[in-house]
Image (cartoon, rainbow over all chains, first blue to last red):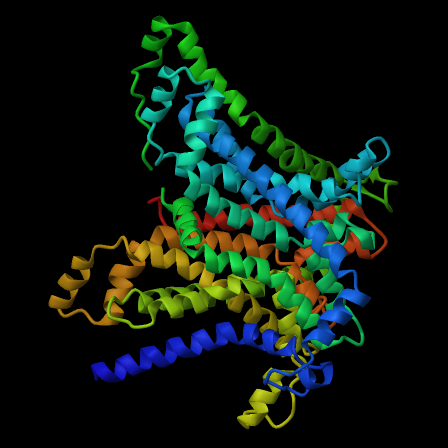
Length: 275
Length: 308
């Protein structure tokens, strides 16, 4: 009976694992096959990989999209971490009058659906287009700015700061460091794990963001990877091999980060939840 | 939640000690949170206010004029809106419970200390989370195509004799969307439960076993109650996420066939950027999501009781 239960558990988990992994295997195999082979359900690797990569980079603005997505994701991650950790630290370390009320109000913004503010944001950036061109509609800055500051990361860093030894702040003051100096010289280096976890989440969110770039980035030279894949996928005569190649390339950075920094990833998630 | 103990004593004592130190400890905090407060006000609260004003206006593009409650009245007689609302609720009521139960089930199985290949199973089930929503949506669109692998597989197993029109049948298209979201998010929820499970005292299970409790009883009388706060947390996150669902619908079915898979977010997008733009009415529809998010979160808090 026990043995039977064991076999049942392993079978069930194996099926779950297979279902989870299969789409990945399929896209890896399909990027090496011709479009016809993909539609005929070929599940073996073929010899068409270089041809697919060549077509992708020659016929589609893949390079532009990669560059745009990288610029947006790197700047967003940097600013998110900086502003989020400053705020999380500020809320936890200083007994600023009314800090908990302000904190709770900021947290309310997590309940705001993006679709609800999409139209006003679009009109805001449309409004500044004429006077501040580099910040208007169809600029990378407009794609970055509204996504940089989120209550989630303030919450995340405040939770993590709870585990930061407050004595270090006093020690820094005695050593004559400025308040910002304490933050950058003492807090930042000791909180590397939290920063790594936050960086992973922020980078992934930005790299994969779709709706806001879809709304605000209109010209082909500002296209990001998700927009490119969406356009390829919506085409009438899709070249499956090429699309799968694009999807693999798009997934590669986040997959690599996940596999290399899995520990940070899970640690960060736990840190953000434990109250 | 542990409140930080103020080691220096009460604020009054400190004020007497040194004004400079008191000022530094309290008001410099403003500088640290300033950017965040400004950013969230500018990019969340201000647009919310603007959307509220917009929701009382109507007109094409930027030629807007105030029309009172007309937009809100229009909602009730707008078949597309009602379809989008119904679809979103179908996703919510079917997908979220299935996913949470599956995730709970996986996490309990994986929490067994004697299980082999635990790391492999955990990583495999979590893996879908590394894909972008657009990328996996496109993959699911192809997998569920008429000549896609799902049909080929089902036909090989002789479960169906003809290929199914997954994406152009109203019911099957919804099933496809639900299957896709479940694939993408189950592992994400599982990670939360796994970490919470590690905090449950194992002796509770031992005591239950001695008292003759079955695995099912242990699951429902120990695991579920102990995980209640985290289940609440994940179900709120999933509810908010599902109410806003956009990327998958846009890239798998484009809202079709007809409006059979259209979601509220996608309808807002269409109203603003696909049809002749009616920003006012779009803002009205968007307030429906806001109200739903607030109401459903409150209900979930109530149902789960007051324990945090």
